[in-house]
Length: 398
Length: 206
Image (cartoon, rainbow over all chains, first blue to last red; front, side, top):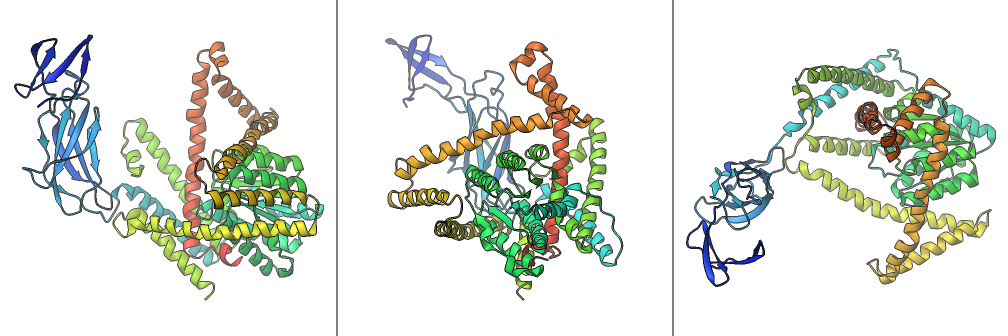
């Protein structure tokens, strides 16, 4: 067998030819044939194949202990080759490779219930190590994601607390809710715009209705629209997404109906501008300059356009209230707006503004959940400081 | 019934999404992808609504001629050019649509993005005035981080970059994570309210 490769070492061209035995190579140097002893890399050990956990089936993880020549010894290993067969004796096919230094390969093309044997060989570019075979293993789908138990516990705790306080609220118990300055200013902002005879502008962020912040924004829009309808103040809602525009139109329409002012509702005030991020920023900036609103609300998900919008709004002299759960944009809003709802306050707005007992109960439950998690974090920090990282590991979701 | 059906749909969809997060087995594992596909289909149809709204508004502005009505001409012409270029020659590389996208649309978007630098300067000027202890703390932190990230900082004191990194990695990161935890709790609480039908503002304005 003639090996097909060319090696350049110290300026001499070696042409490999048939090897007398497995571990030796013979080279043509000029007109003489020189046999050089060639040693195959040491094989990987402990080759283990097991079903990939927490998946929908179709996956097997093959792992091994690195070859003695991988990163040590002769350092000759360049990759590992993984072969698969349904029989331990024949039919092994190369299904993938893993670079040197790696000791894990995921086979994502298995048929659930079929038993597979895996062989792993170290490869140095010329020679393979001895083949090391795994036990037979079959993939299967799991019915529960064990890496997400901590998340399930957290959801159950929060859900229990929320439902518990909703029940208390239903019984008529008085619930104290911490004051949120940004939300208390909402009515003032609408009133101020009314007194100035200027419209209100409501910007529902740049993400679509599949984002929870946009949904929260629509809920707040309903409250703002109702107040605007009562005061008969025009409400402008420039939208970045078509579905958001449709949802905003319905929300505002219902709010005007609810306030007994259906005739004041103007669907054209809730308009679609563009899906493009900076095109939207330019469009909203233009509207701000032309319409000079008395109050501007930024509620929802924002990215780099946040400061462009908020600074333009600031230059018009409008009272500005922002709310977002995008931590990277919060400093911009805090700087440029009069009030900012930070993170969770955006989600508390609906309950806070409506003062409905059921919604306030959920807000109270949320606050208690936060207190519990603060305690857990403090305990986790103390344990981790003293070298016990089990709690932190358990809280990490897979 | 008009109110009940949306609430039932919301409950089923919400519960399905929660279940699929904890159960990787089929058919639950396919639910998220399936819902995403449905959402994309709805989005495409909703795009027609959005474009219809845009064209209707600007056509009406041309008829009524309010102040600044000529901006509507620019929009309608731009829309028509891009629409015709895309429909007639396609949107592949080398087509007129592609040329207009790279040479007109993208530079204008970049121009808007570039404005951010000036807005950051004006906002920083207001925020960094040391009028209160908090604002002073902000000012000092900002100066340390900014100087620490330029060669001048290293020239002044070789530990200054490390100090800037420490501010970003510990006090700043701790604050950000606290906000993230609050957000996660808010998301769970809001989702629960919507799934259980306690929060209905988005449906009926109540």
